[in-house]
Amino acid sequence: MLFVSLLQWWYSDGWRRRAKIVSAQIDGMIDYFSIDLLAKTLFSPFRQISAGKIDGPLGVQLRAFADKLISRVIGAMIRTVLLIAGMITIALTALFGMVILIIWAIVPVLPLVGIILAGMGYAF
Image 1 (cartoon, rainbow, N blue to C red):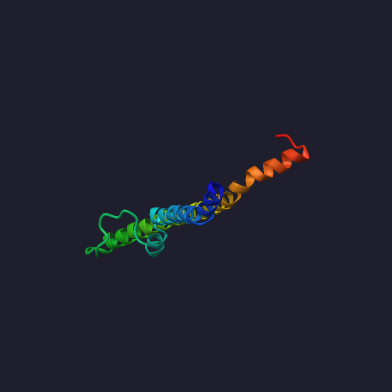
Image 2: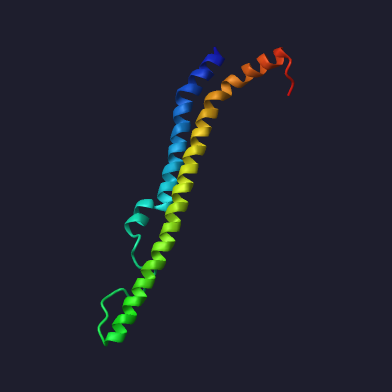
């Protein structure tokens, strides 16, 4: 009776809890990398102190334009690297979570497989 209760919990409530943990890990990675925010601000200036309108001679305005342009290019490069790293990390977290869920389903069957293999003469 205890074994049946264990299997019932393992494949119902235990499975749901494990799936919630995996889902929380994926959500945590999505929140950590803020993919949506990085995508929205992809071409925003990167750590620019003064991004306002610059008044003055043409040389000052051109220098301000070049500063803003360089800042946007650097911001886009850094955010692109973070986007790629974030997507790879999120995909690996999801893949690892799926492997965990598959292993969770297989674990109760492993002793039976071990008994069958031992009966067939396999030694580990």
